Amino acid sequence: MHLNAKAAPMAAVSHGPGPASGHASSKPGPHQASVDEIVHSFEEADQHEVSLAGYQPEDWICLGIFWTMAMLVFLQFFSRYVLNDSYAWTEELAVYCLIGVVFLGAAMCVRACRHIQVDFLYRYLPKRVGRVLSTVIDILRTAFFGYAVWLTYRYIVLVGDEPMTTLFWNKSYVYWVALAGFVMMFVRSLQVSVQNWRQGYSILENPAAYESLD
Image (tube, rainbow, N blue to C red; front, side, top):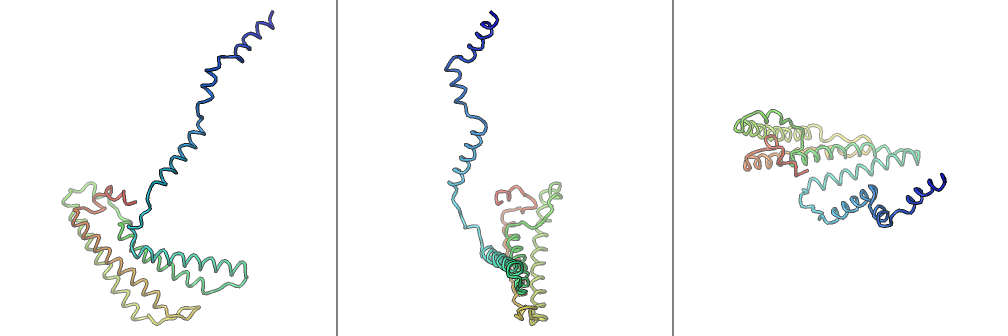
């Protein structure tokens, strides 16, 4: 009697209605949903067109110097730990390439308004006062880069004949790259200042307008 009473509910559970169980098995789990979302994101990325229109000459030059530096560092590692005979000139040239990346990369940041800046005060200033202060900063920034160009040129004139340590090349090549970086910063600063004057605001006054550039 007791065995038959227990067997009946178990049979009812094991032999439940077919459509309900089939409906439960067809529902996708959370893992399958996440996989579909990832696949869909890749499909959306494939539809985006790659545009190189926003890049300028200093971007490509800086990229070339960067990869030259990377190859020099790899050659230094390979010669030191694999050949057990380190090429001393690779370290010096890698440092000089880093200098080029820094100065040309700084010009890129001036063009894109990506140098460190504090815009907290502009949130509490009247619009007219903020516009005047932003214009003064544009003038001071451009004047600083112009002064840096003159100082770098004076430095090249004084010590431009100094040779390198390992290759005995003229070190003025490195100084000229730094000068080119400052000249590019000066030019880009002028362009940014004119653009700020035409549009009536800068990144300090309206940071949200520049978020799309990222």
